[in-house]
Image 1 (cartoon, rainbow, N blue to C red):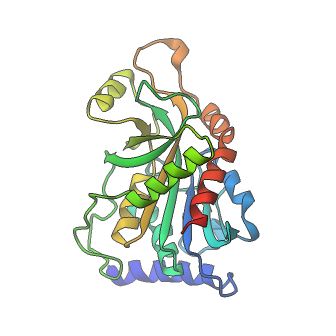
Image 2 (cartoon, one colour):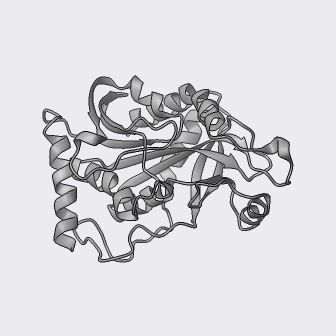
Image 3 (cartoon, rainbow, N blue to C red):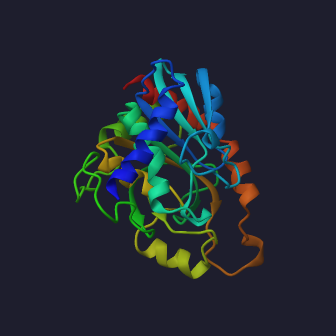
Length: 276
């Protein structure tokens, strides 16, 4: 079982590595709904569609293009996922973990994750950019099953899942660039339905600031691999707390709102990568 899993990961990593002409990325970047345009800022890019990588799933979610983009950003070699995979698409947690492990084999030391999220925190507004300081996981844990010792320990510690030093640097950058950055706790549920008002009230009660359907499995796998993680949520809708028709959620609007803040997120990521 473990041999076949490792063979799949190594095969995918080798397929990507063969197209990189010896480049070794330092940073992996996972771009969420409507945020894929950051990949367009990468210089001298190599574009690798997921459907050309052996064993890779295909991204089907709205606003996810489905490519690896490898090139230079802020003077560093990066590999960006222009679109991620989600549990609600029907993929196993093993497949959700695959790209992170592939990037680890390609040499990354840092993982930057982003997502479009709903605001459970009443102080957050649409187009706020929130640095993730912790998470609450309501998805299956991607490390369930035989442990891949090649990557990490059976019981990884998540006390500091999101790197404190990177958070502090990002907040300093935000202050310098006059960005009103916030920090918060991200709550991940399976989707694909948006949360009911009762669920939003419950999630808020247990400490959630942002609500989404991704990110946490990738972070868990990254920490298992020993990667340092930095995460950002872009607030694209204010979560419903009342059963009122005018507060419906809409996937196309989520993508549109995220797209309006891509430039701001690009500046933050670029400045932070410069300091690595």
